[in-house]
Amino acid sequence: MGDGILASFGAVAPDPAYAARALRAVDDILQAVDAWRAQRIAAGLSASDVGGGLATGPVVFGIIGDGQRLEYTVIGDAVNLAAKLEKHNKVERTRALATATAYDLARSQGYDAQRERREGRAVAGVSSSTDLVVLG
Image (cartoon, rainbow, N blue to C red):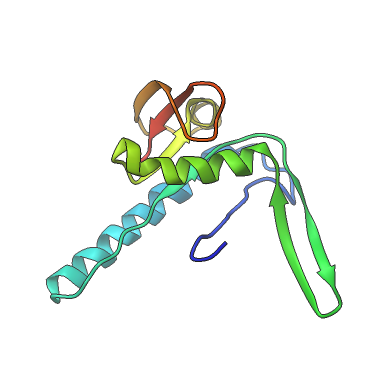
């Protein structure tokens, strides 16, 4: 994934609050990055930022490879959509986006942060318009 990180919630072990935990993780990451960036800027150093994309849905997961190299991977439409949303942050001028479906699911699982909705967005590589929620 280059300089990217892929995290999955609820794939290996069932988790009834997987979407809420995923959104809270994004919130925590953005907060930590903000603190790190502030320290770097105060020291006169460069401070890169991060972007995030979050989608929910069925995935296939497992360990692939051979005896020389094993790797855990997750594949599926939700994974591909999350990657496209991460790239779409530049278009929306945001840092982190989720699908409205993922956000609504997280809210039903106890995630209580209010976020801005952006409906009917054209995301590159997605055939239909997508309702988004700005996480950061």
